[in-house]
Amino acid sequence: MPIYAYRCDDCGFAKDVLQKMSDPVLTDCPTCGKATFKKQLTAAGFQLKGTGWYATDFRGGTPPATGVATGPADAKADAKSDSTAAAPAAAPASPTTPA
Image (tube, rainbow, N blue to C red; front, side, top):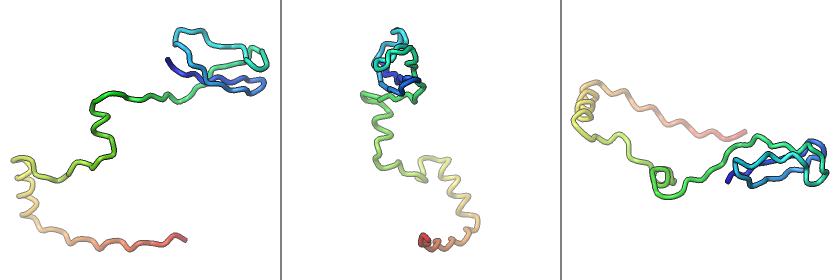
């Protein structure tokens, strides 16, 4: 069931309410009793549970290696880059101190 955020326009009372999607929208403020209790637009939050790509690929582990030759296409690309003159490596940037 989703959690909806409500706020009273008159007194400013705010409350999060656990409701079914089919439940009617609340209109009466529980503190002042006026019909100015309105549902607010908030960011949706959700949690993925169970096993799957989201649990295994984005858990903060070590990133996969890049630039590794995996087949004939990569070997051809490496051969082309070896035949051309390589540009000199740039000197590392010196660290700057914050002002």
